[in-house]
Length: 121
Image (cartoon, rainbow, N blue to C red; front, side):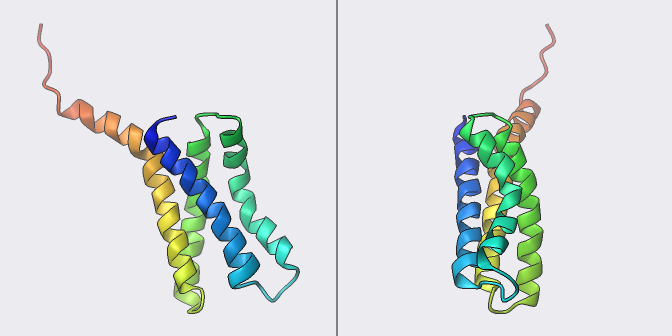
């Protein structure tokens, strides 16, 4: 795995830890059992975590796809719940980190081709 892929994997694990902190300890939901909410909010990361455990290259892609959900959730919570704003902003930052780091190698390859002059041999 490339360095940016490792950074994205670290971000995926950090997003999972944030879900446990946010919904389990810091701001638990008043409706229902805490563990149910934690499990439900952690489910989108499960495919990418399993793929990371199996060392599959597609793990970072699926982590980026799940991060889109966490980005949207963080935006919504930061606008609507004042108490959750710091944690929601952390979730937004982690989600953006996973998306950017997961896309870094592809963006680097794409834009490095533009800088090379054409070869007319």
